[in-house]
Length: 391
Image (tube, rainbow, N blue to C red; front, side, top):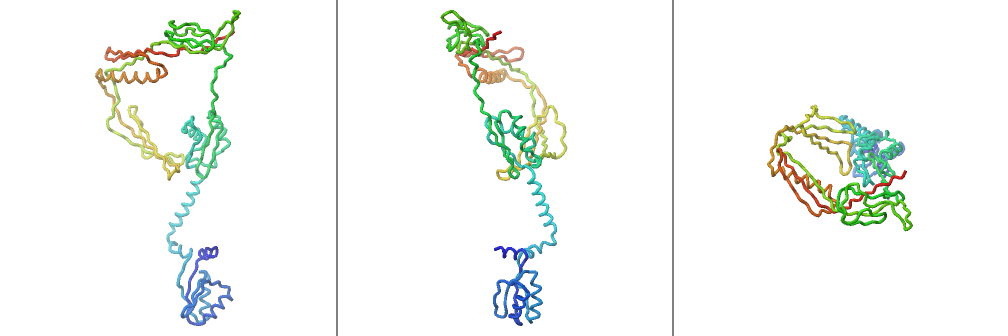
């Protein structure tokens, strides 16, 4: 197999020899150390193969033996490329392609993050970008030990980080720290006080001395469970109070919506700007004018990839929508619907952990404004721990 490859690289000629004295021709070829292969007898001569550069020697030997020799077939690398000799652009292109391929292999093309659950990949990639690892960064400039050390400082939530560069791909593998549960210091004495006004429904005291009873009305900041306890002998001691104090509370959420509002509206004119980022270098297409304060901008990006592999080439597009401000008049019903929507959102965010027993809603118009308020009767744990300062 190796001999066939070598002969193909040097090029071979299959020849036909007729007339004269073929036996003498073969003897002279062997004497001159010319290697002929695949010899075969023909009706009026012989056939064989020889390396291209030795064919010219065979012509002299054939002439001395009174034989006629002619080329039957040429094959091999020299003959395959002969027709392209005048097309120097092909060889220049291949050379440039090899140089570009080598240059591209010196850069990071894509970066992947794995092992994270609480820390976003965007945050980790942003830190890696600051430390010099991004699509388009030069591999030889990356100091992996330094990157790991700096990343640990910038991302205190991680236990360790590994940076693996394989070819033109960088794989960032991290292990997040497991947060120990925050436990209240049992030796620190504390009281439990009211976080808001309310009427006590029931008290569940696990440790400490209850300071109120069911049915009592309490104010914000009032003591509910004391961290001072007395034993049977009358001696006092400090403890870390613990318990739940459920009370009926009243919560109010108010919102206002103007009936006449100034709103930004699109004129219908859109300006699109494009730019490309190649190996960290951004190239804008066309001139970028100044963005007006009234313009509404939307940004889009698309990373070029081959299969599942991302390339360090990103296309950006920015759409600028020209806007103008106009006065929009709402009916009272439209303003009321908007106010109810805002109140509903706040209800989910502020009262989501509370049991709502009853809710009432009021609205009115005043000076061109729709005023809406919702009152909620709730049942909730109003206790909050407060450390007792000992001097």
